Image (cartoon, rainbow, N blue to C red; front, side, top):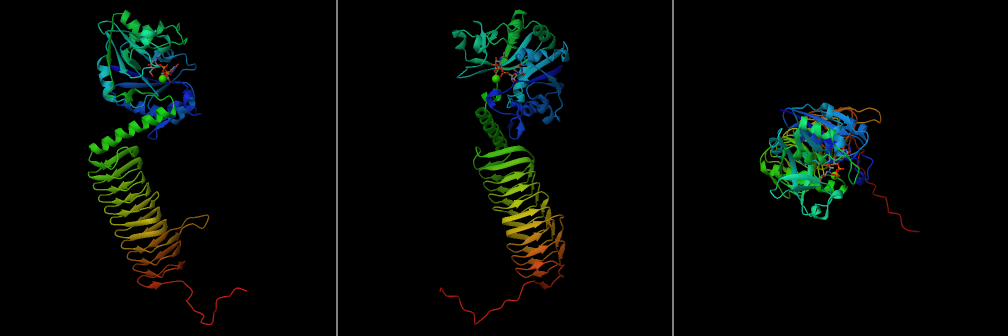
Length: 454
Ligand code: UD1
Ligand code: CA
């Protein structure tokens, strides 16, 4: 069985009030259409087609990495018309799966059920019962509960409008039958559109049965038409991910206050995450890591027993085992901390390695540096790595002690076990084991008197 998935994504999305095509709006930093693609890409023996229209070039460019065939629907004349655009790609013995590009949370398990219900003798339809079915196509059944047809809201009688079981738009059907029905679609209805939903009645007339299944939860089949719905599905998606984290052995102080915009390449056990932590990209987090409130962690590798205190921002950085970072620390790209490192408040590290057991605890900037092991960097130390044009390296060898408020003007090397006196501006390499300081000698003027007001 060959599956041809058609993702309908040509609609304009007027109610988003956006210059961006609707399907490019994001949930968890991933385009709506990309979510739908991800789910359908999990199906085996499946070729995916995207029917695009409004803003199509932008959609194609931004999602060029998707393994799909792009099909243009120049004018949006209805869902049936959209599917007609793909007719030449459909073989008679294909199973055609119709998805919507703006329904992002559909689960593969729901599709699996749908696909087991489809054959040459049966059409599979995903329906859902809604407390408020207004706006949706209604599922009309006979006295034996057999599906007869779908009637759109605008074409429904008052009695039909009372039906709460609605069409999700998602269906699977035999390719040959579908092509036959598509050729017979008309637009004689309230919206003068070619409704894909009209194929249901045609299937029934051709002697097929319509087999329905429902999703595990309503959010799976909700579409995004406005920003409120986008926000609702973002939270629903985040809650799903929070549940997955907890299932994997992570403690979340509040599952409603975490955002995962990406995934975890590694996720250890007994990780504890306080409120309002945002994960982006691909993160690797080992066992027993604790992350404080309000941290942003992107593409990070975090070793076991690490404690990240609140309000820290970590991006494209590596943190070795047993490190303590923050509060209010910033690890920028290519910061690499070995094991047992302490990075304290208001410390920024960029493109630097910090060796085992070193401490940079207060108010420092370390950029383009190689910091050895057992180094202690005092408060307010700055590596002056940039002359306005080029960047230079600072090397601080093992065991060095840098006094507070030191500027290290790169390129410069501080030797092994060297001590730098507080307040120094170091422009030349400093010898190992010695004290180096650059500061004017302190003096006191005993005859000096405070001025008095005239
Ligand atoms: C459609 C269904 C309705 C169902 C509802 C579920 C029809 C006629 N009606 O109604 O039964 O309850 O979805 O949300 O199918 N699209 C195109 N090209 C077009 C028109 C639409 O690609 O010419 C795409 C849209 O981008 C969207 C999807 O098809 O992803 C559904 O279109 P929409 O206009 O939202 O359909 P509804 O009128 O809501
Ligand atoms: Ca819709």
